[in-house]
Image (cartoon, rainbow, N blue to C red; front, side, top):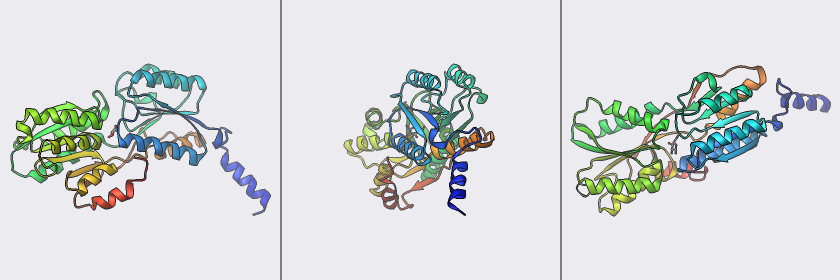
Length: 319
Ligand code: AHR
């Protein structure tokens, strides 16, 4: 290939069907905040993916507030971005702003959480099967305790968020029919380490200094890590006196598993932006509409799965 042909080929590849250079693509990203290690990793990976692909990423941190996200979306629409990534803090209340994006012909891709709006209002959603995650956690616990009586405490995620709703449902599905398993206390810890610890302290106090608790199910690892601290401060051994199962697979939970202080976690990949950008690129190129839901994998890790190695492999990935 001659130098001229090579340059022409590179130039042709850089142009999409609509004639815009890849580097000219502007993406608005409305992120929930930084409530967890997982969320931090998702932000890091989204920035990296955008940089690798030559996009101008406009980032907005909503600090956990839906009204901030709605304002950010309106600002992205006014700026005329080429696409919007939205990690919606709660499931309800998005219809109007999604309608506005659609009227402006700006495709919206949901990341990691779902909304209850008409799916016609967004291009696609990238995420895991959140009900399945809860089922995997519940099944692990049912298999682990067998016929033993087990009083479970549950730390829920952010109230009204799709992972809090679905992970609860999934876990309850899995333990239904096991009369020896009972959720005796359940409260939100808002997906944060600090609140996870605080709520666990109140559970321990209400449950005979923690001695009546057999297992903790936390909707994310950060709350589990906070709760593990509370269990230790109460003079009990997390992972032994109180089994700990949670969701995300962040490095800190693997460190806890390696120390015998946590038992199992269900992985949620923080790389939601990769599949989102892949779908957008195909859509921009030839108008192919992606499937409404692009599902990421959920894998169970236990203490048998080399937690120390998993910690090492993940500790520098932006968590
Ligand atoms: O929506 C995904 C959840 O949000 C993660 O499990 C949790 O850590 C985060 O805050």
